[in-house]
Image (cartoon, rainbow, N blue to C red; front, side, top):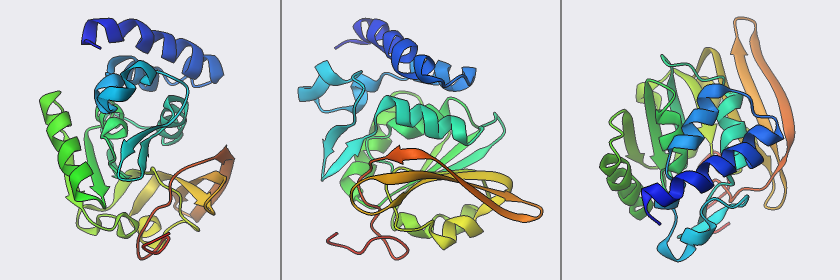
Length: 218
């Protein structure tokens, strides 16, 4: 699928799957309408690139459902000046969406082959405001903290404590919390008075592997 032919299904995806389901942030909608999702999926799945579903990308990982990408991005209330940490680079699609909206994206991936492929892909598409790291995402990226937003693209049994500590005052964190089946999308905001936490419904993600998440082999 060439870029020209991807434009129509991309806009249809935004209209039906995202705007049609209540996501109203215009910057998020514009980013989803711009990022060529078909370039972030395996060639064998090009025909499903704009479907309302997650898709496998190898190494037991997935590219998230477009609606969930939009919902979690909007939940951060991202601004042009923000610095956002993403945990779980995967194919790089979520990082690309964030890069359209915020000043700087820091993305951490546990699996080196995925991280390397995502960096090449995003560089080829001209995203120069993304920094990459291979490592334990549950530890965050303390050297670059604090962050205005933190988005976790894998499920943790609880909100990882290091990520909470790396959230700036006024910042928001979105993370799927639960077991290995259905999880709950959990949102956290750090205020001057402390931590506020609430949920936004059910979701299903692959497990976050790390010291402050699920153990290796989960």
